[in-house]
Structure formats: C-alpha cells, structure tokens
Length: 453
Image (tube, rainbow, N blue to C red):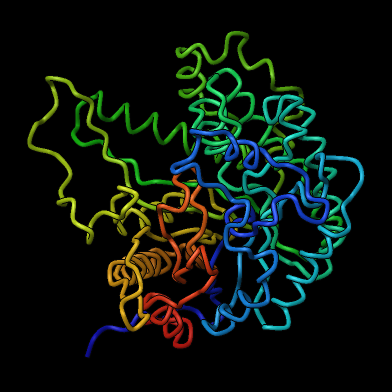
C-alpha cells in the first residue's frame, strides 16, 4: 500500500489571490488610482500592454468565486484589500463603498465556512501617496496606519487573521531599484529607504490591528527562496549569502528583533545605496519593527543556484535537472520541493516564529482546456503533491506549520507578465470570465477532504 501523508485535523487548506490581480473595477465606486493602475497604463511596462482594469472581474463576480471555493472545500481564503478602494488618496475620507465590498466578501466567506485571511497591502499603493514620494518617504507609514485603522475597525470583528504587507522585498527592490514593478523607479538609494519604511509600516500597524481585532492573529508575509552556491568557491558562497541577505534576512532580521544584518549594511554601502549611512532609521524604529507577531507567512517558489563565472569554480557542478516541464515551470523557475522543507526548517529554527503559514506556493503552466473542457494540468498537480509532501516533512521535524495557501485560486493578472502566465488551479477565460476547475483543483479538493493524500 502507498504511504499516506496526513495533516493535523485543524490544518488550514486554502488558496490565495491579490486585489489588483483579480478585482478589476479599477475606477468604480469611488476607488482611487493605484500605482499599478498608473504603471500598467504606461505603454511598454507590461507584456502585451496588459492591465488589471477588468482582470477576473472579481469585484462583480465575488459570489461566483466564493461558490468555487466552497466547491473545492477550501478551509481558508487569503485575499488582499485594495488600499485605494478604502482611502482613494491614501488618507483622509474613507470610501464607504469600498468598505462595503470587503464586508460583503467576508460575510460571504464566513457563510461558506471559509476562514478569511486578509492581507492589508499587496503592492497597490494609492498613486497620490506615490506622487508624494511613496514608500521612499516616511509619511507613507503614517498613511498606512490610518488605512489599517479604518479597515480593521470595519472588519476586525469578523476577520481573525491579518497579514500586514506582502513580500516587502519585492516592493522595495523590483519597484524602486529595478523598475520592473510599480512605481517603476531605478534608484537603489530610494529602494533601501523604501525597504525601511515598509518594515516600519508593518511594526506600526501591528498594535493597531490588535486594538481593533483583539482576538486576531497578526503577522507579515515574506518571500523566501532556497539559495544555494553551485560550488564551494568563495565567490559562489558569497553570491548565495548576499542573495539571501537581500531578499530575506534584510526583512526577517528586523522583524525578529535583530536589526539589520551587518554584512548587508556593508554590501549596500559598497553599492552606494547608503551615502549618508542609515540616516533614515530614527530612534525607536527598530523596536517598533520588532513588534511581537503571531505568525510569519512564507511565499516559496523554488531555489536559486549561484554560479559566479570565475576560473576557481568547479565546472562539474551545475543545475542537476534538465529544463523539462516536470522540473521547470513556465516562469523559468525550478520545481524544487526540497527547498521548501529546508526553508521552513531554517526559518523556524533560526527565528522561532510561533506559527508559520505557507501563504503562497504554486506553479505557472498554461495547459488549456481540451475539446471536452477539461484542463489536464498534470505538471501543476505533481508540483503541488511534491510540495505538500515537502511541507509535511518539515512538520515532522517540528516546524509549526498551520496552513497552506496555494497560489493561486484562479489564473489572473501576473504583474509584469500580464496574462501570459497562469498560476491558477481554476482556468479563466479572460474574454468571457468563464471559470473551469483544472484537474489540479479536483485533486486538491480530495486532499482537503481527506486532509492528506
């Protein structure tokens, strides 16, 4: 008989989405312009000049989408709230129609016995705030606190799981340094400031959420990859260390009270990112950022092998897997489940969070419906099965993993890739808004029902 993998009975099986990627209705019912509205409306920024103006039309079709979740038997749903829908200019007058939308969504989820898991910021900053300097200026943290207060006062009686911000590193580095995400800036000095203010916004928001939703779990969401040197050369090992430092430790260390990692302060200084040192860090900031949290959410998609082209490297060591769909997703990310086991263990044993959720994990494969209307996405099913097993191995080693949110519930607007990448377990026809459960969704349904496989 095949081995069975069984999860604890209270394990939260879920799926995740983000507001800009699915909602559409970008200028409806008082919603303000977001940085992603502005960015996608600028020609040449997004593949095929796609945008999220309509996306999955979830703002209109949310009842249908909750119906899909119920059909799958989801225990939890992670969604994000569009800040410009609540405070159209980032601060000031609250847009009641925006509050009402999320209030109806939450009530609909609860009626379907699905636990709402809300993320306050998944990248769609009000454009008005960006015009004033965005995350690179400190005043944006005050606006975030105002927004947090407004939405948690409205929903805190029913939403009992709150994440402050999603993937702070992606906002800072891709948005302010590399320019491939909104707001599309290329200034490393601004990016390091943005990173600090994102962390500060998290720390300032935690006590506000606790006040307005006193019995809720509060945490933040960090992205983590398995960073591996391709050889034992100093250059390869340094490259892996710096990559991990930039994308993970620069954010995790301050959240867990360790301040900024010294090796990365030195690294950023060497790049000219800190011309005046850490002058943007004010007294008390690091204590605020280290506000005690109940969980950390981890988004994991694969590993990065570091090979620096240098003569002292061992030429025998390279990517061990061929670039086949089984081992590589269409995002050109390696399918490497062992890295999830390692990442979960590393975070728990290094930082001792009270609880961990996998807040995103999934794969992009664009398998279309066949002539009978079935989506035979074998590679995605295999991806999920091997990653669920990898997560279970971490739990057996003592990692307090409490839930798993598959990315994503549906195919959606995939940021700079537009609609060219499909991460959903539900197929979406973006012209007709038809939704079809892929085979991976049907398989996931049985996993949830049996609480294992």
